[in-house]
Length: 166
Image (cartoon, rainbow, N blue to C red; front, side, top):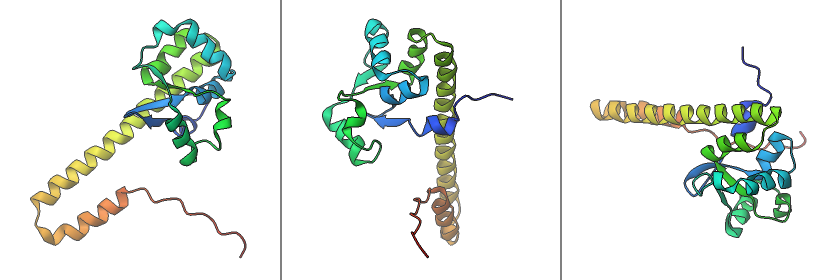
């Protein structure tokens, strides 16, 4: 049985999509690695040749504002006064060669597993939607209600806020 030092769900919720790619913010990675964001950024800057633009990029002011407006972070002060780096999956993998602590290596393994799990979930969802479309095209309209009901089940319901009081 695998021993996870950080639950995959905890990592997966920190994977965001910016500029059409899945990324993790330097602030979140520093927290997971149990290092200061400043220390993580310094390690990256000392090894900047390992991080081309498709491995890492800095968020723009507008992208940072979007993090706040979408409640990903409570306030821009959360970023420590600097725009965060965004690491792609390859950039996160490269971090393991820069951060050499035992925890960094273990956390990196967990993050890679989370990226793989996310890909599997997305792939399964796409495959299911494709098969559903093929079946709908194959059978006549009397099954439309069934296919619509299945599609509804595939959509994740939004979490409702609990009412306070009685």
